[in-house]
Image 1 (cartoon, rainbow, N blue to C red):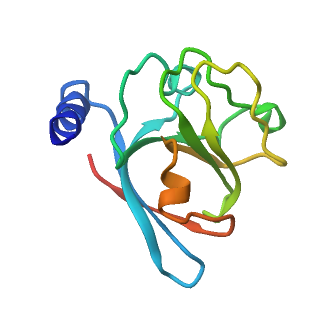
Image 2: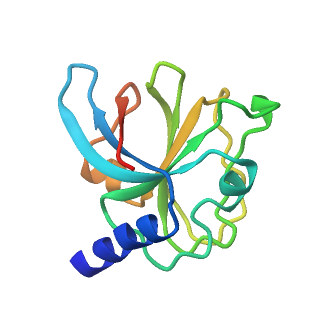
Image 3: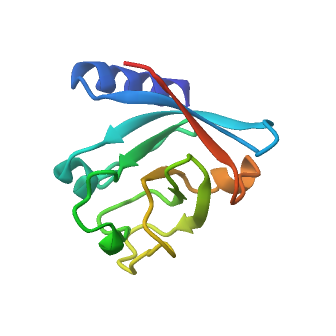
Length: 146
């Protein structure tokens, strides 16, 4: 497991991928977990996401910046070409998780549509939401990593 995480960090550095540390806490401040997340902040990065990757470490993920999406009412996710089960957290402008899709299944092309437009979306390894007791109403905190 450690070798995959180290490989992930080396890839981030080698490809100059922008990343941030993300922590999630309950509304009363109890820490749920921490992740190193790649940033998907361009149309190409958002479209590709975590597709075609064979592995995702438990403390790694991807944070999609949706703040500049032209029509935020068209935001939807799917698992096309994604080989890893994912938990997908939809986040409002104040950093609150308002919708969670747990264990989105690999290669499933069913659209995952939040009830209203998110400002950001976080993908983490499937099962982490349950393992870390992440709930709707929890809060995302970001800090620069690279």
